[in-house]
Amino acid sequence: ERRIAIGPINGRLHVLIYVKTAKAVRVISLRKANAREVRKYNECS
Image 1 (cartoon, rainbow, N blue to C red):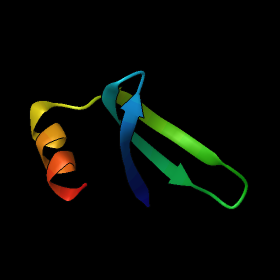
Image 2 (cartoon, rainbow, N blue to C red):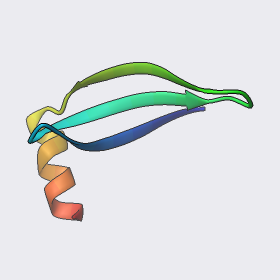
Image 3 (cartoon, rainbow, N blue to C red):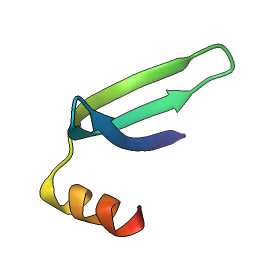
């Protein structure tokens, strides 16, 4: 099951896609958040 985390890194909002397994957390991707994601993040925080 893929999960999404969003938060700032060095003042810029990023999106992390990852999977939790029994033994580890596996990162699928890490990228800068797009304008829609930034807007949604700001609305919810």
